[in-house]
Image (cartoon, rainbow over all chains, first blue to last red; front, side):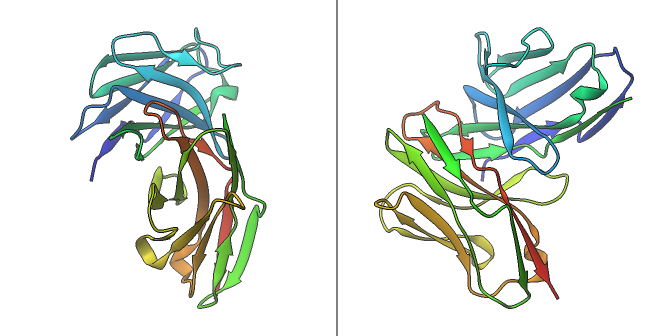
Length: 115
Length: 114
């Protein structure tokens, strides 16, 4: 089956610094990737849709200047949390689809802790 | 737009007992339906999906789900659960048109008790 790799799995950073999270589709080309945020004991909330070669589409309420998304190739999308603060601490998950949306393949998730 | 409801936030059940996790959805377009499982601090793993055809779908780990269009439901069932089934379960829906994002339900925490 298709594999999506997300890195790092865990990261701890100081308040005010930036953190980059990578999402790679290892064995297929993903023109569209999705970034989700998951708070403890809650569902996944879509943050943005990442389209290869164009600007990401952000959901309402998501700060595009804080959560920078780049989809430079058909196999890589990155999420950069800029000037991170403790309230940005969360579990971030990416996913990618192909074959006309018949399945979403998820990365392993990244646990971000801002101290 | 689509939405998903999972009425049970927590379901405790004893080992080897049957379980049903409920999922209802709403959508103005044709949809695909999915169940995902999430273990602590991990991503999501696909259990099963309904795309078309038979309304009874069998997945991994002995799970199955039945699509009921008239009731807009996609309930997940397993006849006999194991301790290892303890996890968070998410029902999800996406529009048939390519590029639409997946909409997830709030999740159901299944706790299997010895």
